[in-house]
Image (tube, rainbow, N blue to C red):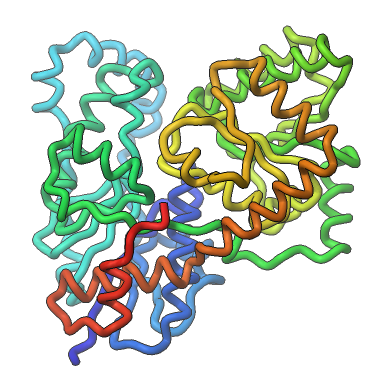
Length: 418
């Protein structure tokens, strides 16, 4: 069998892409474990992302240097003028905007590298004649348009449709997202495949007791706290969680310390302003971006995890809480109820009273926490990055017309886990 060469887009690590970075790192760790096979996995990465990815690569996985993107001497001015430019673009007729959307083409690197399959892990891709897999992840801009400018919605729609049309396979993490893509974009069902992901923290080393102590002292953490690790985008609903804490304080006289982590966005100032308005600034901690080992430690140190998001394809945070042995609660949106099963408490993210009630139960009921932890362990045990990698390997072989083994066929025919 000739060697199958797969390029995996990893140019976006540590560039504010949040969950996409976790997908790439998890996939790298899973594919690195597949030492039996005639495949070579080349992670397309620039210098910065290659350094971040390097600890997770071994065996059949290597870096394919992408080089640094060319930076215009006017980029600083363009960035400063972007808000005003977006306002102008929003006034254009959407039909005109669609014609202005720029679709990048391959620079020739993957073609000259004898790549057989191009695996785009992010919504941003490029045009190529090489067979590709594309991850649109979710269509939040259609369901929550209030969080996007009209121009941004048009750009997303044009790019997503273009790269879905180009792809031999559109990969999604849940059956909910698959059905949404079939409905919104009218894609053939055979083109969209569910490949469930796994907790990103499976790829990281578990912190020792000594390391946990160092993390607690570094961030000056209370002995018990609720944890929400998420970038501060509006749809992540940090403010809804603050409103719930305010209700808890008024209804039960209970003040729960709350720790946030995640790269800040322009919406961070609004979250902090609301915390001050509610008189909660003293019990809220914003840690910003943290390294993987610290993230694992924060899960372990927390009493509970709460995920009030208004939209997700699937929640890495939920799996990570299960894996860390921490009780969790999450929103009743998209695929999250199916992902949680009976292992997490569920609430309406727009009902602040419901969030408060769930927090109160997890904070005060030790037996409930014990039951949720056990169910979470059982739930997350079904998922691993090696299984995800084996599923993608089967799809790589299928798309490239390679001979499929018994395991490949079984994975391709198995009903989705999520």
